[in-house]
Structures are given as structure tokens and as C-alpha cells.
Length: 428
Ligand code: ADP
Ligand code: ASP
Ligand code: MG
Image (cartoon, rainbow, N blue to C red):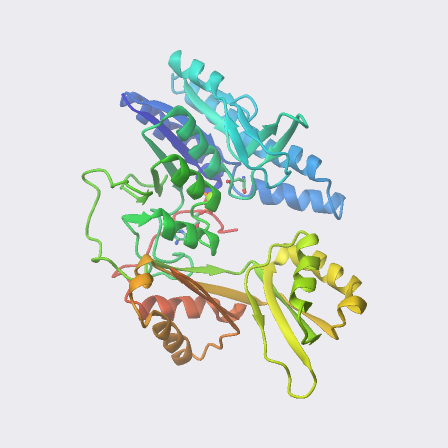
């Protein structure tokens, strides 16, 4: 008998019918003889709707109260799912993150799991029940407050439970068949990957592939949990995310191209660009500027500094950051304009980031040339470039991003023969 942890995302439980459909899948797994623990997300776009509601009553909602509000979404879905399972004649018990022992740091909206003490989960399993745990939420023992793990965080709940319970596999179900070579909503010719290395998956997730949440992939890699990303709308195998030393189970399809240099293309419309104009070109200015931004709490991603404009002794620094951090960073910079001595700030929230990811880049040359060539042929202008060992990212106009992703996907020979299926969801 195996112990399986399953996670169902919002798009898989968007209404009563879907909840019954998911309940049936869970019951089928139980019938097959396995112990089943389920992490569930809030129904459909509930979390976004709750955020919209909060914004209507307060311009800057208190983080503690926001977590109280958002954690209610998963309480609704977990209880309904347990009820649906009961009506099929099976025993199921739902638990909040706190009841399931998800202990986190105190950072509201971005808490990290520090320990999992699933005593009640184990007891319920021992008594033969199916266990449903509210995803995305935890509890801090110092503040004694409810926390949430960041958007997409139910994936981490599932992986952390799988690690703590020593589960055989962590199945993460969503509205696509697995991890594709690109977001199938953007690139219809994207192909499903049968396996993906956790290192490549981390880069894809960090750069916009929200099919798996980055912290869940990190957690799985650290704790040796095998993730199987698959669709709750079909029964075929999905994508196995392989950490160091892991191999895909026997029987997994294997028509993989041999050792592709590029695993996939990720797209991200969630960033903004700030350009600081007329920065005195003297030592220490970058340090001053990025200290101010760090203090504002903004997470800087790409940075570019131009050469000095001839004769003026001044330069320009551009950087990207999450759109949601931009106004705080701009305010912090403006407040120090006199001390730093720059001339002007320009805010641009119409950018898109395209990233090409592949472990094979380490040992192959010419990968970036293919990217630049494809973008140039498509007439897409590159505004910024950054690279890591296994990734190249470029910033382009947001309007150009989808087209850029399609031509780059084709240029690396990633296109499949058939259009990818997206089963549900609004992609919000
Ligand atoms: P859930 O609500 O189940 O957590 P998400 O919406 O978070 O699901 O993630 C699934 C979505 O991720 C897909 O509908 C797809 O649009 C998007 N996505 C982005 N990049 C990829 C990729 N490389 N492979 C598959 N899906 C991707
Ligand atoms: N409901 C949360 C969100 O929408 C967590 C999750 O779905 O993973 O971000
Ligand atoms: Mg998700």
C-alpha cells in the first residue's frame, strides 16, 4: 500500500460539479488501496476575488487581516471536498493548515514552512480516513497568527506534507497535462515534457511558468520528494520532476528528444522596469541606489547600466522588479533624489520577460545566437539581457511577448505536431 499526496489547484475545483469530479478521483485512488492525503486550493479565482474585495475596503490592507481573509478560501474548498467524499460513502476529514501542523515563519503573505507536525493527519490515516488539508496556509507559533505561503503556495503545502509523511509521490493536479516546453496558453505548439530536471524546473518556475510554484520545487529538491505534475481532467501520465539521483518510474512514456539543449521557454508579464536617468558616474552610486531599493522591500531582478553619456559624467541605470513592488521603490528613490543626485525616474509597466532554459546550455555554444536571430527575424526589439548558467532572459515590449515566445519556441525546434490542450481555468 502506498501513501499518495495529491494537490488539486483552483481550476480543478472551480464549482460544485468539479468538486464532485475531484472527489471521485480521490475515492478511486483510495479504492485502489492507497492512503490518500489531499492538499486543496481555493475554488476557481476565489483568492483573486478576495484580494479585489480587500482592495475595495482598504488601499493597503493589514497583512495579518489579509491572511485571515485569504485563508478562508481554502477552508471552503476543503470542507466541500470532504462532504463530497462522504456522500460517496468514504470517510474524509478536512484540516486547516494549523490543524495539519504546517508551522511557518511569521511573514504574512510570504511565509516559509519551517516544520510540519502532521500528528492529526497520521491519526486520521491510521483510522482509515482520507485526509484533506487546506493548501496555502500555515501558522506561526510566536505570533500565534495564521499565515499564507504566497500565491500558488498550495503546491508547497502538498510537497511539505509528502516530505513529512514520507509519501511515495506528490501528484500536483492542474488544468494542463503537465509541464510543457512553454505555457500552452501562449504557445499552442508547446509539447508536454515527460521528465524535467529540478534545476531546469526551478528556472522555469522562477521566470513565469506558474504550473509549479518555485518554492514547492525547491522544497521537493531539498527533501527528495518526487513531483508528478498532471491533469485532473484526464488520466494520462504527466511530467515527473526529477531531483538529484531520481529516475522516472518504469512505464513513463519515453519519446523524449534525445538530450535537448533547451528544455523550455518561460514568459512573464508580471514585471515592471524603472530607469534612473542622469546618475553621477562615480564609484558608490549603484551601492547607494540599490540599498534604497532593498530597504523598500522590492525584489530586483535584472539590472543594466549604460556607459556614461559622453562629456556629462552621468549614466543611466535600469532594473526590473515585480509590478507590485514598483510604486514603493519609486517613492523610496524619489525621497532620496537630492542625496543620490540623479535627474529623473521613468516607470515602464508594459514590459515582458522571455527566458530560455536548458541544462544543456552549459556545454553548448550558440544558444544565445539562436535566440537573438529568432527575435530579430520577428522584428522584436530586445531591451535588456541577462544570463545564468542554464538560462538566457530578455526584456521585450509586453505586446510582443507572446509572438516572441512562439518564434523562439520554433527556433529551438521545440514545436510539437499537435496543439496542446488547456482544460479549464481563466489563466488569471
Ligand atoms: P492551479 O490553479 O491548478 O494551481 P495554475 O494556474 O497555477 O494551476 O497553473 C497551471 C497553468 O500554468 C496552466 O493553465 C498554464 O497556463 C500555466 N503554465 C505556464 N507555463 C507553463 C508550462 N511551461 N507548462 C504548463 N503550464 C504552464
Ligand atoms: N489559492 C492560492 C492562490 O490562488 C494558493 C494556490 O492556489 O496555490 O494563490
Ligand atoms: Mg498553481
